[in-house]
Length: 270
Length: 199
Image 1 (cartoon, rainbow over the protein chains, first blue to last red):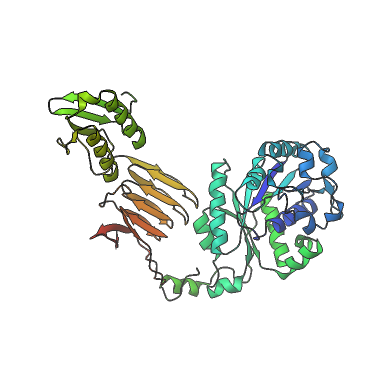
Image 2 (cartoon, rainbow over the protein chains, first blue to last red):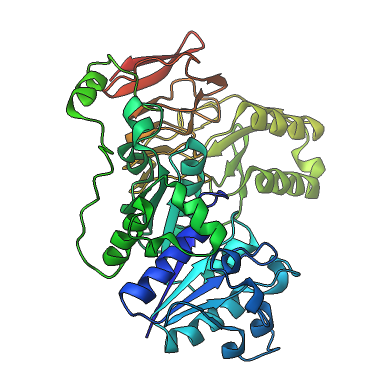
């Protein structure tokens, strides 16, 4: 019996799709798991583009939900990686094209044959969000070190709690250690302090993500990519291993900086 | 106890209207109106006093009731016995204890005192007729004494609210970034201004 994990954030553009693509690819490639990545962003689908599978779509999520095709017909097998499948969203419909009940049923069906079902949740807290979380067992929340993204993540944690999710985990994306060091960016502690949930991983800002996203090749397979390394660590943590947070060039402020903050000589990062 | 929003009793001094604090004011208002309407002549010219077991009326609500009584030719008497609560202190014996983080988009409303064992994050709203105590960091909006109690307080282990309201007074932290004190603080009304002091 597999596990359904929804990747969500509230705010748009923080890296839900990139995270879904990388975690999915990594779980299939490094852990030999059977993985389905499900794009729940109906009308604004991206996961197929990021995976470089756009031109293979025949049927989609909405077709399956409405019984227009069989489940297996809509699943696209990845061109490079064994065990990796994509369930694309419909592009010509909108979020009301499916219901939470249909999603639940679909997830139940997928769970029987696959180890992981990763759901790429749309931004927002409306119907699309409700559909995406309907069939999920666990939730991962992606945020960037910005006040607005953290605020939205907090809102999402509240909504997930209300929906009965226990202990969603946090992924901090696009952290810039140099800016944190200068006090120009929220640091990890600031974010954990507000959100009060467990951290799954921290992904540093990495130019390679842009390149790999445009090419349709997830960065997780790039051994030289820092972000790829962060994703590989996260995959091991998802599988239950204890992996310490990697040192991304002093992600934490050093001791003297902390002292200065303590004595009020240095403004805390906002 | 009966669940009727309003009970009317005759006494030596006139009539007493007992209100059920669990009913909404709109229900009470409607019930009073209907009851008086039914025996309009009987009540006309009478004196009325009001009792609420644990709740209280805001000034606004009190005025609305007064208008109804005036319409029926009755006169509303001020609180005559200590148990007759018209503008009493909110009942501080009622406490809502919350063991969780109150997050953005969540609103906690309570008739009484609210105690939060956790944080109240930005974008959250805590609204109480009595006091608000946060045994963590208060980062959201807190409104104590929402029905007009000017003695209500807001206290927090770390007080960093987006906005504070006590009774009718609204205040926000100064725009220029000040050092955030690392000790518990309490906010209360003094001469109609919200002041913050170490706890």
